Image (cartoon, rainbow, N blue to C red; front, side, top):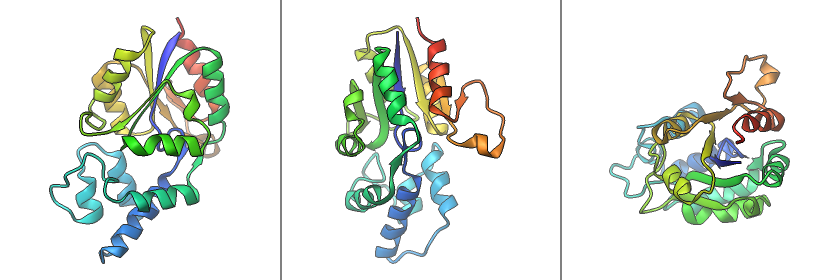
Length: 211
């Protein structure tokens, strides 16, 4: 059996447009000029970038997550447009049927995770749900993964994510990393051994790690 740790945004939940729309509305309300969507996307995926400074022009932002203090904006846009990637619910059902230990580790604020997962009817699949909080560093720090591993029952673990922050967190925790590339088959891209673009491809990769 295996422990499977998932990121949320961009891995299970197609929420990038929601995040970009929330940031755009916050900037508008703060009377800041528009910035390209590509800049927002780059910032949320890249380690070492101060998202609060890029998004809001705030130096020394006091919170680990750029969503803290602006929760109402993100909640609004998540409710309007965030959806599960195709096959995620069925994939999680299969993982539970196989008796995998499932965890979620997200850079979103801890208290906001369960309501989002419940809204999409997938909260029940996870044995551990952990997000940014005063005692846990955001990815690419491995602290979230370490917390999960301390409470997980199996020897073999993998982390499933979608960006460099996730990849570096897995590397820092010294566990295998799987990369979500939902829908790339439509673009005829060649997948690497640790990449998947459908639920069946992900399940096939996970099966390789079963002990």
